[in-house]
Length: 441
Image (cartoon, rainbow, N blue to C red; front, side, top):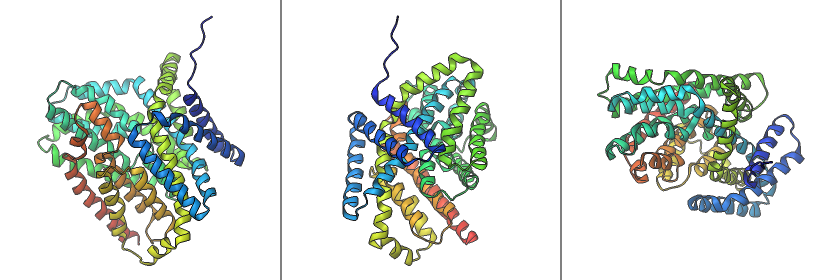
């Protein structure tokens, strides 16, 4: 009798974390929370040596800072609570890998790829911009693997670079509204009172504006007919993407669960149902592919756990030091806070500081200090900063993925033509948020 292949210990622990996260959604038990946090620590210890060097250093810095603050403030309870909160993110990353595996099996993706391949060069870049924004809302960096083969590694360097930059612009703009991005998940851990439908409406509006501005800045010669062909190429994927968003919204409206919990509950059911319609073999293939691909996010799980632990200790530090109260007493204008979030995160990303770090600091500030600003606008300023950091940050996974998929140097993408877009659209975005603050205020 043939033996079943052995599942590696790290993947087994991650599957156990996914199950524990699901159980904790329905049963909030302190013992279960503590046990799952212990499993998460064990998982990180096992996979740490397999995480790339840059992420190891960043994890070490965040972890050391969290421990130092916990020692200084006796904040061990807060630190442990941060680790317990991180368990749901392990399930979230598992959900994303299943989502990507499902997309690989679906005919809508194949049809869209075929239609894009028929476009003219400028139309193709326009199509990549729009397409990666649509598909990137669900697949995130996985969208690069879908469209990079259309351009091909044998294409001229300039062609590959412009295509990679177009993909970066489109995909990273999806961060402004998509609940499938880790940016949104982190934001809701700190600002859970913001209605999801408000984020979707404002985020989609900014996303659409960004696409129009990018079109005018980089592919202005593509007329309305060409743009129409580019948009039509992605019509096959609009229904499933919209359905996924509707499922999450419906769960959020009908249940007491948070946005992250609704994602972890609803999306796997939707994926398995879509695959089951195609046959049981599709389900097995997607599950095997998910198990094989889960190792790709080990660095993100480790880094996010350190960031969440640090975030919880920072809350204690702000209260103990009085810095939060002092900063709130200054009553800074709303536009300065929006600029500090979006602009500060972007500038630090140029120097290689990961957005996990800067977003954590900004979200802790916004959630603990009363600046008199609507939480929706504060969250959106962080999402703008995350979008720009993902588009141009040296340590961003999306930049590294684009460079690898399109065979161009990392620095050409990070410090390339997208800097102009970030500067222009960033200024417009901060101005819009400032205007909305005046209206809401």
